[in-house]
Image 1 (cartoon, one colour):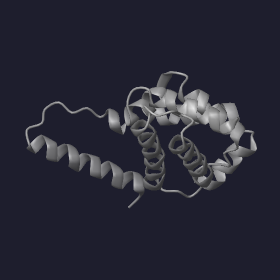
Image 2: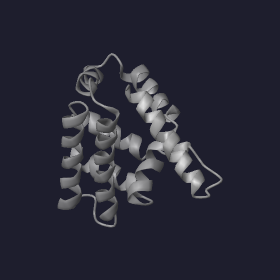
Image 3: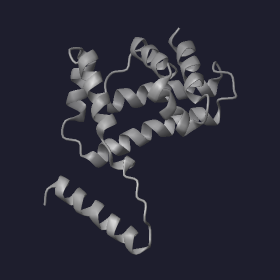
Length: 156
């Protein structure tokens, strides 16, 4: 059975089970991949010719959807850790260790994350929009800005 067919069958089973339990209003926003596809298209348009993007393509080649989800969750776990200390000084040893952990995680799973790239990511994290919302949803309000400040200190 193909992965897509199995995924669809699992979704159908889930919906049937919820219906049997009396759930009437189902929201399927969590299953919508349009935003992910949109991010991927934007990233390819902006950085598709860079060595970092080519490295990303190589590292992600052959990954299952589950592996991609686990990697994404691992990244968000790091932002949860930032959120837990966001009241601290972004120059503190703990905050700086988290920046190093973030940089290493990105390098291990996506592409070589130089200080220059990391600094750019930090600006995107705190720049508003979906990145900021997603990070703050994991670590609490202000996490993206705190991570950005810690990254800027780390990269100087």
